[in-house]
Length: 403
Image (cartoon, rainbow, N blue to C red; front, side, top):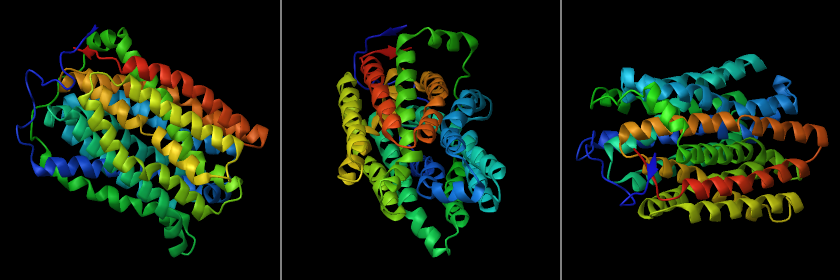
């Protein structure tokens, strides 16, 4: 059961991490965060070329854009159990190796099947890191959950925005080869592997989540509110990641401009993620923050629906602010759990269930776009979904703690 907390950012009774975390732990955390989105955000600016060369319909492209949430849901369920058996450091290490291998394999994708399989491998690696990093923060930085979540969210957005902005120029430099441009991001993933090699066996393994723990979470309204909020923000985020450049291109803007506009949505997250998560960690409740971010999203969708080419930079800014619901969700997961093992279980539940519920969203947007021939219906659909996102965010942000 959830109950009221006495403090906004509680100190666990027993900290499983070091009193003074090693610098290599900070490096491992930040380098991993840098790699949590380039596999996805690098694709949007060249999606049109990928579809053309691989013969993808808009619906199949919608399936491609929904692959992140599908992989995060399916693989995410296994993350805390794998960490209990092998140690979270080793699992994240294997995840980063899988990211590097998957992105490298996309270099050789001559058809849709291999491209999808290589993407799935990279996304599986990202999935385990997505789930385990909040627990790593709780275990290694138990008194600085908000600040450290903000720091790695900032790195996450930096990686996302860099991939979005640089992929089209990279492809141009590489003689128009989008495969090589996407493959370049494997190098960044490879850099994240050595710090985790150094951290293997550095601390005790987290407690394994038992059946009773999973059932208890499944009955907890706070856990379900977090899962619902995570699902709805993920739907919005991955539609923006997968389709926002195409929306701008369909409005008559160039591919490079569309990529830059999309990168704005991620660049804004670099400073805002840190500030938002740090502020959220100091507040007793985060409901008001969730409502404000939802209002920004509604305004951004309304602008894209009415006149996408009129004020494209403003719409990108509004959606960039709205996408900070992701670091807010991560921070709330860290704050709602009492200790590292609880956060690992809660993160597994909220992210896996959330991503699973988010799977239909990008597919529905792709299908609506294909069958209506425009973006009016998809954008109206996204605006409607923002209302339950605000509602679940308000519920998840209440001052409660899961034991």
